Length: 231
Ligand code: DC
Image 1 (cartoon, rainbow, N blue to C red):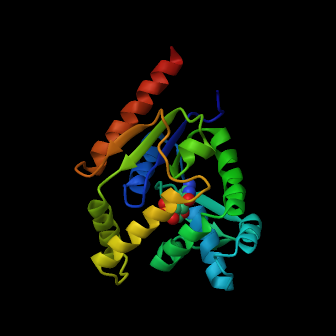
Image 2: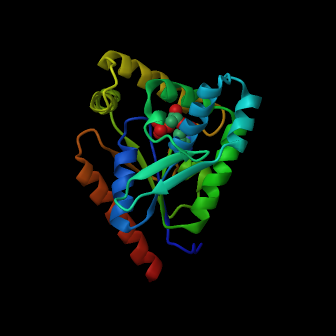
């Protein structure tokens, strides 16, 4: 299938597998748009927390997802600002409270339908590196390149903990480990669009790899795909 702006690179995996860092860098190297689908679930969760909406209430949360305007604004340096109803929430969506609430939010079918629709429209245009949990299975099962990133639980918790320390969030490593464990369980056992590797995806275990090594490997797979498509 030909898309106007290029191919779709779908990168899925559990929390802390390195998806965001890697997807951002791959997008930069290719001059593609970086789409963080998790940021969309986080945006709806943040709005619910601020409005005092019960995140377990499926009907209310689905309605919220439908009426919320979420914009991912790519900057010239490759970074992305997240706007919710016009307000910049890039940092506000990264707190542990929002992480927890977004995991609950993302299990609601109505929320997923609303956000998946927005994501599918972006994928149709092509020229995107899209990152999340169900990009290769639900949002863009026809993506030209599918990557499933993994890493050991301890390594993923360590990465998350360091990231939070750098952002000045006070939390112990043990707490982060527990949070990651719970989120993994919820994200991969929910009934709608659970985290799953597509049969034709390439799995990369990043536990003992540097970020550059992972990015190089994915860019190489993209180049191979592009040269096959030209032939
Ligand atoms: O990748 P992240 O940690 O920013 O994602 C936040 C939450 O949203 C996470 O609990 C899983 C969920 N999510 C999802 O269900 N589907 C996606 N495509 C992306 C994220």
